[in-house]
Length: 323
Image (cartoon, rainbow, N blue to C red):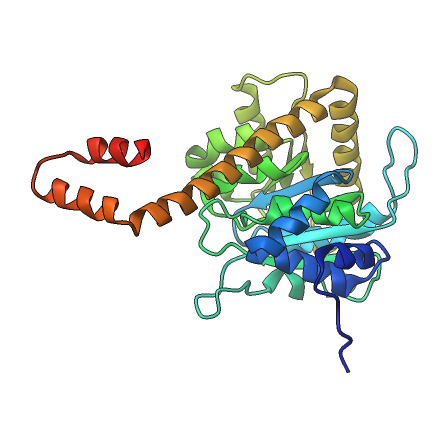
């Protein structure tokens, strides 16, 4: 028999902080749905410590889910640099394609993470893109904060690979990995600007296949021709299906974390993230106001004036916004 959970977000958060996974799942569902309950969850989570967020992005079929599955075990071993730091819980938000039938996530990523499905120290949640072109569900930043409020020090965000729009993952991650595979070079020119903008690390997965050496060469050349700061994104070869190269990958993630913290860049990135989130909230609130405006008489009157040629769309918009 299913137990009855409280409906109050504060009570749910208190349970989640006591490692109640069902309550935590309910909180994430609330921020996905939005509404007053979702806003209350976001407010409660906002002042909690921010978890260190690792983003994975790349084209479909690059093996991101298998890579994440293997990485979870290493994350649980703790940060190796500068001195061992334990990590008692790991959260994973896998942003899946939206089902065309139900509007929910297809859950393919969770199927490939069954190794950790029953691990009480690991929380894996699939989230639907709901048609969002960036591949990153709008609720993901709030969900990351919920996991932080529940005591998760590290959260992995895996996103749908949708070409150049992958850059949006950087808005929710401290360290961003771009996963490529041998033979990816045909799409390099289209993705180059976006990849260089967001990549803190490059991962050549399935590196046991022909073309891995050429993929590394192409990435190195791309980096050589770019203006880089103090951090040059390393390139790590992995074979996620066997675990080859995963320890090197985790060491590079830790090295990047140390670089961000020692240089002060981590604080700046998180400040930029707050600016991005504020813009996102303002745009969402503006959309609500516009929807309300569009159902009013003044909007209908403006449409008639447009049809009669008395106004152009910009004049009509200025008049309505003035109201």
